[in-house]
Length: 543
Image 1 (cartoon, rainbow, N blue to C red):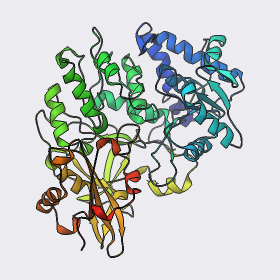
Image 2 (cartoon, one colour):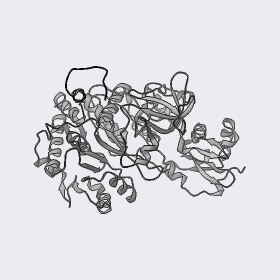
Image 3 (tube, helix red, strand yellow):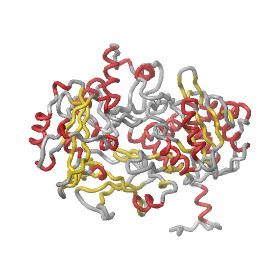
Image 4 (cartoon, rainbow, N blue to C red):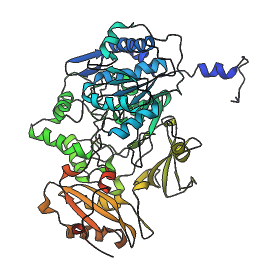
């Protein structure tokens, strides 16, 4: 590159690049120096200090190097439940230039084998719980990986034995890993076909962690409650922040309410960085607290609570803010870019939020703009595009998606927003969830927000149904614990009062909350609902 200054040295570009070097491996060593005796991983029956963690990471890295894995070339896949050992390969890879693939154990065989095939892993670290799915990968790849068992068993190697027998010295003291090297591969949900592998570099992971410090106001010693699977950004992206601040990571395998509350009630500990709550877990969490007469004043300080408020029933938002006497986090993010709208503009205590309350402020380290389908910048309303250091490097082995979704450093999110006069952004809907009925655009969120005002409705989802006359029409599915209080005519009346006639659903279904298919974080899987059979008994109008 050209410079606007002259240092008077040979090979100025290399000279300058050397001062930029700081990666996740460096962060690991730094944390071990600064917080050696502090607890970094805490789970039932097991606590690990920063110094011990660094030694385990070194041993794992040395064991893999001793087995012939090449620096800057090897790929390690992980298939396991949330547990302390899960994160060790991330940091071992950071010191050696390996790439780590965090496989989604919720996937079925074809999808899971596809995800593994994208990265062609040299080794697969697998727990006993997912041994059968590990065998899918072993049998499904032309070049099967070495199997490393977390819990012992038949296979190529035992994880703990590798660590116990290898050196605790720094694995590659003279090797520099470029911050632009890939570190972690996380996978998108595969909503339009097979999942895509998102490559997150050292640079991007560090920047994502620092946004938690700046925008979420994490403080030194704060802990993190990763109940969402560790193949999800909400559990993975916080790790650099935890290591920067000397905090404690509390792996929880799913939303174990009792375990989570016990952690929140621990004495003489730091705060909790973000109590991440989604619709599928929110009510159970609050019900448990109330049923057991737990005083939230006895809990450790929580820096922020809630998430993705556009997806949450406003009644639940109000209930959370009143119970904890703190605002509800008004966030937005994606695997490819992390949290890009999360600074300020949170929902105040006691407010039943409407559209005016849902505007979001820009996060740190990102630049935003609105675009049309041809990437032209637009004003008012358009698809959100993002650039900045938190953005991923691209999709692994997927040139078509990279060409479509990235341009000149910008990533198109697929989400439609409006830009407000005060500089905030308001979410409209996913572009791919748009219902095009008779040439008119219908955004599902418009209908969902209206019916969620009904006191008995828990969740609402609008999907498309093919229609001979209109091409496709909206289908509304709502869940409730009390079906006697929810009627199609009442819902249609609410919608007619608030929306144009062409936006009204042609089908309405009322179900129990547990009937909704859910993702690993508890969100309703809209694509699965769209595949449900259509019953003419649920038709509420014909036009």
